[in-house]
Structures are given as structure tokens and as C-alpha cells.
Image (cartoon, rainbow, N blue to C red; front, side):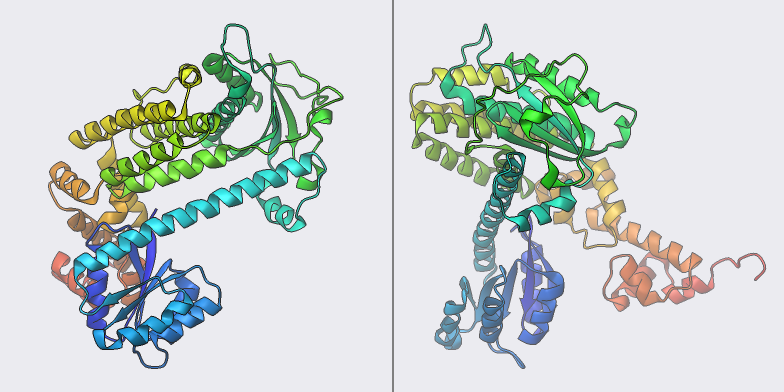
Length: 523
């Protein structure tokens, strides 16, 4: 996760210096805008929506304190850090009542700037994860309520309607959580629910652009899906549920029945789960299971796919920034927390972390050999008699994952340069910094820079500049767009700087290059 910064100072030199400090260090931030006073900053906040504002105290038109007050009064989630000199420090402290988080004393040593930015990035990441998890949990609660005709916030329904509109609904029902030959116990119910939900979600994600899996009762999962991915457009919907049924049976030994209910036009017209079992559109090879008249009411589920997504985002953020040591420190903190939980909760949290690490290794790090056998690990966790032992199980998984990261750093990840070149081709008109591209391929920026030079024979900036100049030459030769427009179209805000780079590349100014273009037929 990368945070965005707005720098506010009436001195251009200060702004340039701060920008360089931020962009030349792996702090997890990128500068999206600059402003010379508080009034300009408020306008920039509306358009750029930065996560963080670093502002000077004394500026014309609107001071930094007045800016902090305006942000506070508008109830923006934007964080604020004040730039101040020693003589203004007491005055600047008045901004604390407006939610200012920290101060940077001028002149700002690079080490101090980076330290604050790293701390605030962790705070931002945690806040975003919490908001995402809360939103997803609220979404799942709303869907459950709609299935059971329970009261729910109509504003939530209205907000979710466009997301779910046009999707198809299927139901996956568990026939027995304690199949013959397995040692599953009643205490393992939530772990099994989590494992099954994860299997369903991962298979659905591999076929469809939009998917949602919601546990609507203890033995029934609602699956919403739409927009089949291009490689699979010839497959019938039943294929999804046949694969889900087979994979759950293979990994957990649990039998399911899968019903493909059909398209959903409105969320407030979802079929009741009892009625849905009568649906004639049933996946081949699966038999429907009717609910008994005394069906259990929906319960408060402690873990869902939202939990898995939150963990994946949390751990990936460290990997994208090349902060392996911080990731392992964070995982140790998680293990410490697990060790203090009741046993059942500890098992669930540990399993969630284990599944997340396996997903990251397979999907993001090209490490298919990193195996995580759900059936075996659930059995292993069940045999552990206290939370401290569960925490140690998690530490062992963390150590195994750390080995994957170590091996990754020692070899060239397959296709990483190809993915980086493709990213530049698609994003050259944007900021497209070394840090952005390194984050896209999940590598430390320094390691990526060295790898790029070793594999291509030239530096990353050289390649990005060459791509931009080639695109500019095409536009100059084939259009009559203004040089300033072309400059922006290929990623340069400053047209004078663009012209300087262009002349260095081609030996001609953009205007001179355009004059030399071949005449079109009939001209």
C-alpha cells in the first residue's frame, strides 16, 4: 500500500527538497501535489485527495494552522504534519487541537523525515485495513439480513445494489462437517467454515471478475459472480460449482451440494435459503439438500473472506516496500497476539495467517512449491492443547515463508523484467517512478534497480525516458497537438524540461523534429 502526500510551503526550494527526500527513499509514500499556501492546498486536497499533508506554519493567504483547522472542520481523513522552525514551535503546537499528528523542525534532516513517514505509513495502512475490514463485514451482514428478511440499513442496500446488480447467485451447502475418516470436532466448525469459504472464493476469483462469497448460515455459502474472464467464456456456469465441489472434497474430505440459482436483479429480492433449495438449475453431479423446518437462525461469524483479504493486504504492503524485516517483526507480533487468545480463536487466527502466506507465495511471488495442506494443518492445529503451542505453529509457518523470501532475493523472479516493461508501457504517461514499478513486481526498489540494469543493460530511468521520447516522436509526427499537450501526454508536467530531454535524445527541439516529418500524401 502506497500513501500519497501533498507538500505545502511558500518556498519552492523547500518543496523540491522534501519531494526528493520522499521519492528517493522507500518510505511507502509518493508526492501527488504541491501548493504554495493553505488556500491552494485546500483546492489540491479536493482534486488529489492526499492521505497526508506536510505543511509549513507561516504562509501567505492561509497559514498551516488555518489549513489544519480547515481539514479538521471538513472531517477529512487526511493526516497533517506541520513544518516549523524553533521560534515558531510553540505557536505551531496550537494546531494539535486540529488533529495534527507530528512536527518537523526546520531544517529537516532526511532521517527525521523518513522516520515520521514510515511511522505514519504504518498508521495509514492499519487505518485503511480496518476500514476495509469493517466495510466488508458490514456488507456480509447486510447480505445475510436480506436472505433472512431481517431488518437492515436501506442505505447499505442502496450502496451495494450497483455492485451486485446483474450477478448470478449460487448456493454451496455442506452436507456434513464430520465426514467418516476425519477427526474434525465441533470446536473446528469455524475453522472449517473459513477453509471452505476460502476455497470457494479462490476458485470463483480464477474465473470471474466480480465475486463475493458470504456465509449465510452455518452450512450454506452464497456465491455471487459475474463477468466471466476472457479465457473461460466458453465454459458453462455449472463448471464453477463442479470444481468447487471437487476441490472441497479433495482438500477437506467434505461433501457439498451446489445449486446455481440464477441472475439477481435486486438485492431486496434475494430468495430465502429454504426456497432456493427447490431451484431446478442444479449443478450436474450434485444433489440438493433441503433445510429442515427447524433451520438454525444466522449467527455472528467471527471470520470470513474479508479477514483473509485484510491479512493479505497487510503482509503484502511490507513485501512491496522491500521491508522483509518489518514483515517478520509484524508476524512475530501476530504470533504473540495469537498466544494470548482463547484456544479456538487462536487456531482460527493462526490458520488465517497460514492460508494468507500460502496465497501470497503462490499468487504474488511465483512460488508454487510453497504447499499448505488445509486438511493436514487443521488436524495439526486440533492436536495442539493451548494457545502458546498454536503461536509456535504460526512461528514455524512464518519461518518457512521467510525461506521463500530469502530464495526470491537470491534469484531472478520469473518474468519480473517482462512484467516491469509491460507496466512502463501502460503507465509511462503517469508518474511511473522506479518505486512504483518495483512495487508492482513486489521487489525492493534497490534490488529491482540492480536487476533491471543487469538484465537490460541500462538503468530504469534511461528506459522510461526512451519510451516517453519514442511516444512523443510519434505524436509529433502524426498529430498537430501542441508541444505542451504532448509533454503532458507522455508524463512531463514541465514542457521546458520535456523539450530539453527531447533535444538530448534526438538532437532537435520538438518543433524542429515536427518540421522534418514526412509530408502526407496530397500535402
